[in-house]
Image (cartoon, rainbow, N blue to C red; front, side, top):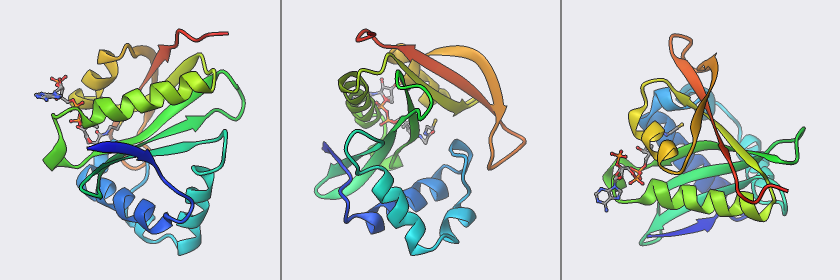
Length: 168
Ligand SMILES: CC(C)(COP(=O)(O)OP(=O)(O)OC[C@H]1O[C@@H](n2cnc3c(N)ncnc32)[C@H](O)[C@@H]1OP(=O)(O)O)[C@@H](O)C(=O)NCCC(=O)NCCS
């Protein structure tokens, strides 16, 4: 298994793995499968552009034998240059509990450090113990902020944050 970043010509791969994630884990993400499936090709091309420009958002892909088995986004905060966000973390169920999630997280921590971010934030659905456990393992703590999952208003989401050492 290795990790790489999505490349500018890979909007079809972006769409394919994002739809797999939304189908498999509908309560983990803010967008529904139906919403994503209804989007035109330009939507995926624009998202791909947004994660393949220098010094901006990034999409890390975990691959095994050239097949994508997981991904996560590192997102910059447009208002606060010291803050970054993690989004969309997903690992194919066949490859879970073997360190893929942790490896994706490690890449995002390195990315945030290189960008001199001093805080990372994320939202996770309440009760998503596997994700919360992964986030706590690298030091994320519950900020106390709560929200509602946009794709399922019966579910609460929890904000977690991590202070980074590289604070300047
Ligand atoms: C959350 C998620 C990304 C974690 O991915 P993962 O690849 O399974 O994560 P890891 O393998 O790094 O860690 C998972 C567990 O496996 C354990 N593990 C890791 N490598 C292991 C190994 N080689 N042998 C045995 N156990 C191992 C970890 O200790 C961890 O245990 P814990 O849950 O008891 O803390 C994954 O469960 C997922 O995609 N869930 C659905 C989508 C989702 O909820 N995304 C989060 C949105 S906020």
